[in-house]
Structures are given as C-alpha cells and as structure tokens.
Length: 133
Image 1 (cartoon, rainbow, N blue to C red):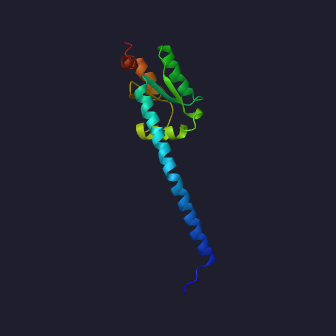
Image 2 (cartoon, rainbow, N blue to C red):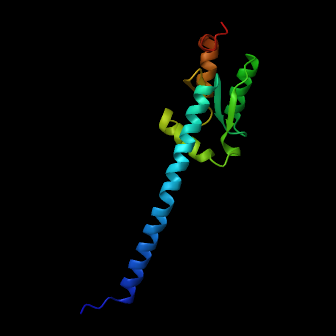
Image 3 (tube, rainbow, N blue to C red):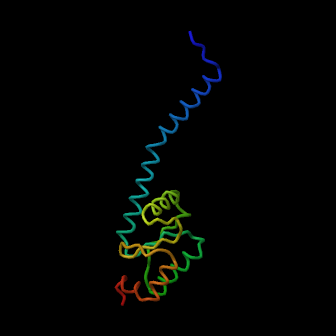
C-alpha cells in the first residue's frame, strides 16, 4: 500500500481548493465582462457623443471643454467613479486597442483620445461628423 505524505495531502488539498475557488468565480467574472461590454456598446450606439473618461484626467477635461465650445453635450462615463470602471476600460482596450482615457466616440465612430479630438476639430472633420458644418 502506498503511503501519501502529509505534505502531499496538503498540496493536493490546496490545489483542489484553488481550483474550486477559481471555478466558482469564473461565471461571475464572465457575467461582469459581458455586462460591461453590453454597457459600452449600448452607450456608443445610443448617444451622439460618448466620452469614456476619468474625472481627474486633464486630457479628459480638455475633451469635455472642446465639446462645450462646440455647444455639444456628450454622454460622459467617468470610469473612476464606477464600480465596473476597470472592466469597462478592458472592454475599450479590446474594442479600440487603447486603455488610456479619454476614448471618444461620435455617431458610433471611434474618434480616439484628446489629441485626436483636437486635430479633428482643427481640421473641421469633427464638425462634419457632428453635422454642425
């Protein structure tokens, strides 16, 4: 009869516990990711202008100021003020390849960040997309 050491039993128990903990949390994480993804898609396609932002970010403030100067009211999602902000940021990374903020969408089209927005405004492209010019 084979003897199993106490250390081996402990290791087996620890691995089993970790496995069940991970297995138990898996569906919840997938649900959260799906929920964040649905929120992002709904936000982009239900609003003329969407800014995924962080309340303290100077680049986000500049983007909001640009829209204010154009008399446009964006839908702003402040990621740092939401419980699911990190998940939303991962969804944006998958969607646009960037994890930085702001990420700006106009009429369902990704504009980019603050510098991209400013360049689009200076070239007149932003106003065309907004239908203002």
